[in-house]
Amino acid sequence: MNKQKILTMMGIVLSFIIAISGWALTSMLIDMKSDSLFSMSEVMLINTPELTPLPLGGLGDDVPNDNLSISEHEIVSVLQNWKSRIPERPHEPMQDQISMEQAIEIAQVEVLSYVEQGLFHSELLELSLENAYLCQKVQEGSGFLNPIYSYWSITLVGEGMMTNLIINAVTGQIWKCNFMATKPPAIEFNINDMENILNVFLSNMGLNNKGEAEIYVGQYEEMIAVRHFADNSIYAVLSTESGRLGDNSLFSTRDITIYLTTQRPVSQ
Image 1 (cartoon, helix red, strand yellow):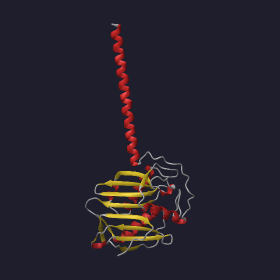
Image 2 (image 1 turned 90 degrees about the horizontal axis):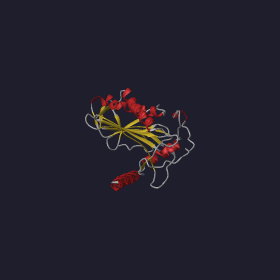
Image 3 (image 1 turned 30 degrees about the vertical axis):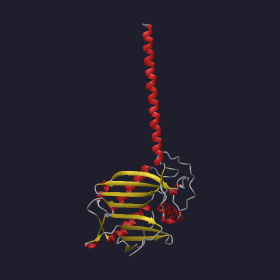
Image 4 (image 1 turned 45 degrees about the vertical axis):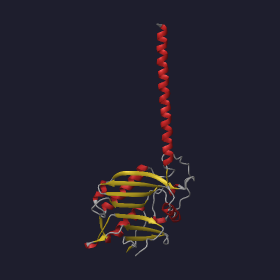
């Protein structure tokens, strides 16, 4: 009888050991697979280095930023990097960079400002967060650049409308925003309001929006409004897809983009 009890106890202990070993092995394999997937996507497993920002120069009265501002030369360098075909590399916020919560709030305030000015329909107020990530454009195998080269990409979606905003992760300024109608009706605005739309964009950045914008038809029959800064090395541009000009100067299009660039859009 005692022998039977001993064998039973040994069987229970052995089963318990096998179960624990199997659980540990399964957990280890799952972790290894998870690490492999994250490594391939380069998301969340990137080790963010402790970077000390370069000395950041101001833009005088043009950019009255309460936080950090960057020089015209640095803006040009960052814009050229953002326009390059170098792949995006996601990362977590570095020193002196805004958080995801701050970036989303900045995006929402930007959208609200256009609606409050009566420039876009109130449907923009019904957008909800679709995607948000922070990244830099860096060559594979190289380290991160100065924090001013990072940007938050915030995408908001709603019924028939989508917007994507690109925010400099240090200054908190929106350097590009895109509004797209995902189904009819198209976006409509008065071409006489193009300068006002561009001025709202500039005002939200803290840039001087005084003076007249140049408005013309682009090489692809799109409408373009342009302001230039820094001895024509930086341009603020409002550009649409090709659309239809109707009565009372109403222009219909499915896509509007407002952005900073180092190149002046080509006219017809």
